[in-house]
Image (cartoon, rainbow, N blue to C red; front, side, top):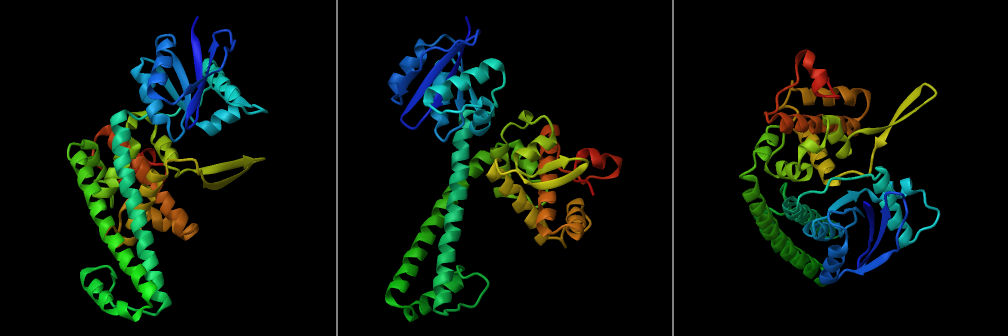
Length: 353
């Protein structure tokens, strides 16, 4: 008799419950997160078992071990799974059994499991994103300290070569501890620059053999870094049935509130791929900055039309959504980006101008 297994995973242990075809649940089994013990338990399960596991922060190694043992892990959205279970009480056993029941009923809210190699590459990309954000925070601290003591260094970039020399000459004007803080922050900034450059070089070696990255670079204002983010965060494009599905996954489709003949568009959904959303919105902002260079193009016309009737923020999101849908077409058809035109324009994008 086929078994459907639910796994409620925690940091140090997992709880497994099996449900058979008749819906009868077995005893809960708690397994410590010791690799050898975990492998021994998986080896005792029926061959090629389907195992439902929530997409927690530590799911990656669990999935690897399940696949290594010949089983079929099924990753799910934890928040949606909880709603579908409809449980009044919460225990590890109930959660594991609930996952197994959803798996048996075919109602498990599954999410895509990236291949191990892609998950590894995503870690490098996300390291670079983290380091860049940390660099920005360090720069903001330096700007804040200088503003408090009215130390002004001319030039557009305080951290350029010439400005750094002038800043070094002005540092003695600061109180002792504030000066030492800036000196340490500048040293941290130099270290971060080295780390970011190292991460980018490793990412570039991955991108050199990627046709998808080259295709994504044909999108307006998508360069080396943004194409890396888009390629690694999208993964396999065929997991999205339509261009609108990719735009929704990137958090660029507003919620719809419709009742009694009245329809209102709400904010975009928050439970999305935030790195992908940032990349498309960042590209939209770059297009706005470079409006003159892209004058007359579809993305600029779209931005200007939406801005007139709405505002800048909604117009940028509309441009980002067009780019997300265009990315789906580019990757699906394996063709470079082309300007939407003529009667096919509406079919190519839900944000047609």
